[in-house]
Image (cartoon, rainbow, N blue to C red; front, side):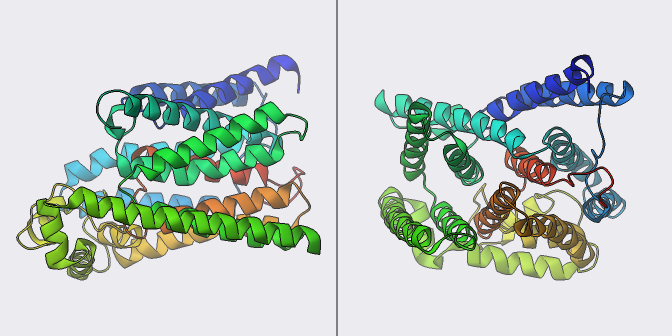
Amino acid sequence: MSPAAGAPLRLAVAFLAATLFVLPFSSSVALRNSFMALAAASVLYALATKGLPAPRLPPRRVLVPMLAWGAWCIASLAWSIEPAYSRGELRPELLYPFAAFLLFFVVTTDARALDRWAWVLSAGLATLALLAIAQAAGPGEWNPKRWHGDIGSFATHVVLALPLVAWAFVRAPSEARLLRAALAAAALLTLVVTAWNDNRIAWIALAGMTLLAALLAGLASSPARRKRLALATVVALAAFAALFALSIQNRTEMLAGTEREAEAQMRHDPRLAIWRFAARSVADSPWVGHGFGRGILRREFRAGSVPGVDNPLYTHGHNTVLNVALQGGLVGLALFAWMVGAVVREMAAGLREAPPRRYVAALGLVLVAGFAVRNMTDDFLVRHNALLAWALAGAVLGALRPTSARTPG
């Protein structure tokens, strides 16, 4: 491919890098959507001028279930209890994430291409952490809504982006001590800011990701390296356990004397009531659901999920699986499971290959596992977190693409 032919793809890479960097910042929706649109235009121009080498589309075994799930979401407009709401959710929750998946798949061709996304996300995390610390050092406390959407979205972003910081650290040349020190500092500052969060499940997700990464790395390691890896894993798990305990203590102190404390003491964790209400709501329309959109039953949840409590946060099932079933019924849940299973299967197949492709596959599985754990007690398959999750899935599968155009997809 000539330099001129590759210029549109280089532009697409630059626009997508900008998208990743601004993604976690508040009030960046219009900016990141513009960057994605420019990236898409660059890719389409490359395609029109034959500057796009094959293969560039995901394999059919991934694309077909994605299209099936998307078609079911669109079809739900026909039976949605609130068609206007469902229609408004299709663009940010279906079109943009799928577009991100395809764009990052197209421009990520190998592990080296994955490195640049790791560096961009590392820079974004470092910037967020520095802004949070600067805010906390001034009058008042850190308010995640100033620079980031909210506490839950910040913790989810950390769960998805922090493994890329570790990836960049491992992939950095051993002699690049300054770069490695900067990455380590970014990770440490991010953990400090995350510890300020009223969030507990993030530590469980990070611990699970660490354990899975260690197990996958240990499969192909020498006995001596396996011992060092086991020791580092134990230290990391102990640190996450301590941070989890600290988060519980901080939450208890924060809720002391408030209505939320009384609510928690009276009903234990309100999620239990929310999940029971969500299960009953699924049973009301078990096959096709109530219509696309996480908040399709938001009024019903606020009125009846936790009796006697009208909390603005109680607008959905607080679990991705439950929310998918609420929106699309058991048929939609089966299609969603097919789609996620297809992505995981592609990643797992890469574990049989030689490094660095095996490491790319391990990274992808770690990201999926962490995101799944994070969404057990809430649902962040929405907005910027969904965009990031699908972008990284596309990048990982792009880096694992067949090495030959003649290789079956």
